[in-house]
Structures are given as structure tokens and as C-alpha cells.
Image (cartoon, rainbow, N blue to C red; front, side, top):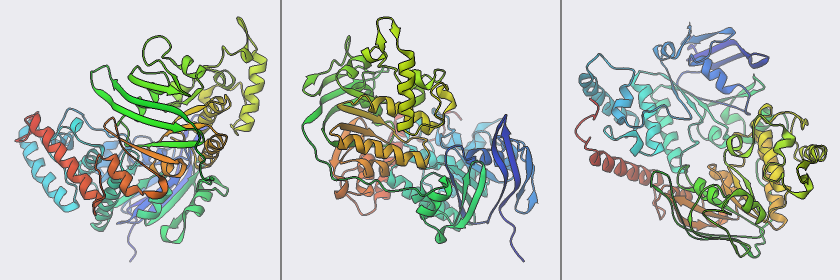
Length: 540
């Protein structure tokens, strides 16, 4: 007698106006397995999982849970059916404790204290069973993202989930934390849980999943056993053509120093020191990558160098001092000094979404003589040049009059890159060059950055994708808590060493994950004691 699938979707379709996000999707997920779902941006992965978790209602199709047809009109119905979801951006209350977050929405009655006592016992049992060690009385705002993710998993398990959906779970984790997560997922699978893993990282698919479904343009194009495929085949299935997964580049030939940063400090509006004495150099003909978990100062450093945030210290470009406060400390002055800037958030800082592609193609440079004279801008000339840039950078569709909001994320990124790279800057600041970008566009963007380096330009790269930093960089500086922990050459280090530096741990202990976990738990316990919550929930 065959075992019923843990999940079976039959003929699922969903449209948003004229856009069909899911087209007649059928998929079976075996119980006690880790099933990966991959696809380019806009392929329909998140829509499909949102239907399964009750956020959206399918236009057509049926859902079966353990062989029984199940209606899932909302997330409460999904939870009742034994489904839990861990979102890419955690749904935790920052000023609540771990324990309070676990029971939130699942209290036994009006009185919190009995619920907290029961939850403390069950949480301890779950943590032991699945090696999900947490500090129950620590505040969420005081613990690292790795432990926050464990809290999200514990929330689902506390609600007796047998099926777990994880959406891009490693996006904010160090490599050691990601390895630890995979051990936890393997343990959950071995205990009979069923896991759906949404990720764009092919390495993770190959490492942890049993089966993988590939989505393209709202349809399932293949479901294969992971052991019977490889990254190249999966990438081709995702994109519909062969994709070069590795970055091909000649050795760097560094020249003179272009960027010199000395003793740079930044204090934010709340009085928190975000940069704590940064020293850094970038030379002509090299890419220096900044590695680190988001929130450790990389963004602030780019903002200072791009003229978006005041600072103290010294910054020079080609030997000329840049103003760090007051007049002359803005983006206009930076551009005049030969600094190009691809900001981390293209939609908020790199583009005006309601404006056309041709208008966006000159923002920041619209006062240049080439754009017109006096009060009159050469709109026809700017539009023609924008069209040429779109051709060179393979922006699709090739419509310079189309507003930025109507381009995909990858094509929006290409518009920003074209604007900055084609200005021939001496120094290019690149923040998250391929965030939310399709695998085909990633290949193109990487090639443009390498070409700029080979033309003798200096490039400072920030990316949360460690494999991207390692592939593109000629030198890697690792940031933690506003400081540079150390510099490494890509050929003389590995993800374990870099991951430890990203977690603020120097050296190379045998068990990197254990070192990270020990540091996190010590930090959480310290904060719990500071807040006086070591003996019980502060809100109970």
C-alpha cells in the first residue's frame, strides 16, 4: 500500500489581473522529505506557497494534505492542517521574549502565566529533541538572526506543525549559521517532518534537499531527484538556456590607491555608533568585497562614501579629501570626484519608480553639459542615449519611455548599473549587485563588474551573498559590529573562516557552528540578565 503524499497540489492556478502567477500547477511532496522549490524572480514560487499557507485563494485547483482534500482559506486553517511557515523576514515582536513570541496567538486562555509555564516546558522539550537551543527569556531585539530563525521554527513546532515551509531561510545567516540550520532541518526530516525549502541558491538545493521542483513563468517545468541532477541542469531548467555559474576573470593587476579610508566613525540619530574606526584601501584594477551579515556597518560605509550620510574621519579619492559633513558632502560632490554609486536599495535610492527609463538614465548627471545647456535639456538626445544603454546592457523590454516600475528587478538593476558604469567612474560603489535578480541577469551583471575592473577602475562591493563576494573579489574585508575584523585573499580562505569573522570570532576552531552558537547563547543570556528577565517572562 503506497503512502499518501504529505502535500499534493492539483491544477493550482492564480491570476492577479492580467498576470497569471501560477498556471495549472500539480506537485506531490513525499512525507519525511525536504523538497526544494526553485525558480527565477516572478516564477510563481511565493504565490504558490502563499496559497498553501492560506494567504491567497487559488482561482482553480485542489489541495490535499496527507491524502485528504483540504480547504485552506486562511493561515489559521493552514496551522490547523499542520502547516507552519518561516518567512524570509521574521514575524517576531522585537520587545517580547522568545517564550512570549512562541505562544503569541496560541495562548490557552485569558491568563498568560499558566500558558507561559506550559510553553516553557514544551519549549525545553522541543529544543532538546531538535537541537534548537534558545534562551527563552531573552528579548528578540537582543538575539542574533540565527537564533531568531530558530524561534520561528519553534513557533511552528509548538503549534504541532508536521509540514514546514521555509522561504529563503539563509538570506541573513552566516555560513556557519546556515550549516547549523541544515543540520536542524535534517534532524526534523529524520523525525518525520516534511519540509518545503524555497531558495535561489543552487548549492543549498544540492546540499540539503531530497527532491526539487523547478518553476518557470508560473509553471512547474520539472521535478527531479536531487541526487540525479546538478547545478548546471537546474540553472538551465530555471532560465531556459545554458547559464555560466562560475565567474570567469583574469588575475587582478592592482595599481595606485584610488580610495583611502582612515579612522571612519558614524553615529546614527539614536546615538548608536555604527562605524567604529574603519581603515580601508581600494586600488585601481581591483575589486574589494565587504563580507558581513546585514546590519554590521556595510550599508553605513557605502552611504558615507556615496555622500548620503555624515561621518568623522578621513576619506580621499585619488588623493583628494572628500567632505564628510556639511556642504560638499553630498552625492553631487561625490560624482564630481569620480565616484559612481549603485545603492543597495535600487527602488528607494537608485530610481524614481514613476519616471521613465530614459529619465532614470541621467538622474544625478542631468546637469552635465552633455544633457543640455542652461534650463533646456536635450530630451531627445538623452532618450536616444538611454535606448543605446538599454541595448548594451540587455535591458528588457527595450522601451526607454516605459516607467521604471514596469521593469523586473533584474532589469531595474541593469538601468542603474548602465547609468553608473557608463559614466566611467574612477571608483564604483556597488551595493547588493544581484539582490532579487534572476540567475541569467546575475551572469550579465557579474561580467560588467569584471569588465570595469579590467578597465583599471577601483570597485568596492557589498553583498550579503558570501559566494558572490568570494567569486568577484580580489580582496575581502570582513565586517562585524562596525569594525573590519580582517582581510583575506579569496584563494587563501574559505567560507568557514569568513563565516567566523562575520560572527565576530577570530581563529579557526574545529567546529565553527558550535563556536557561533556558543557566542550567540552567551550574548542572549547576558542580555536576558541585563533586562532582569532570567526568572520568567517580563510580560506575564
